[in-house]
Image (tube, rainbow, N blue to C red; front, side):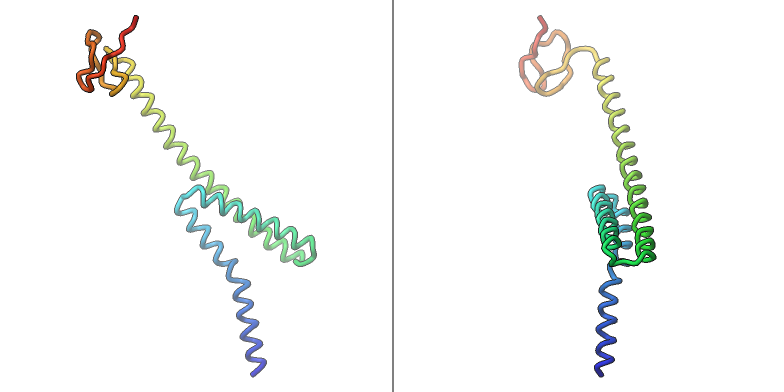
Length: 144
């Protein structure tokens, strides 16, 4: 009876220790799929911390060389994957910004080519000879 209880407790401890290693990889895939830059940054930082802790454990003698090399390889591969995903997310957002900037430049170019002037209060285009904006009623600024 005592042996069965000891085996059951050892199994529970083993599952508690091994579970985070399997759970973290699933969380990483979920974070990358959501595309949230903040979450991917968090995952990157967490992986860096794990690498530092691993190095500390190896230096203190807690881990054997084989275990250290295996875990270090796993964490480094995870870090590389996260960094690639982060680059992909950032390049996609940069492409969107470039497109938005091009649209803004086109609109500014159209406004510069337009004849007349614009109301400083509401932005409506006005003829050169009007004194008051017909849209908002404010007095238009005159040059000179």
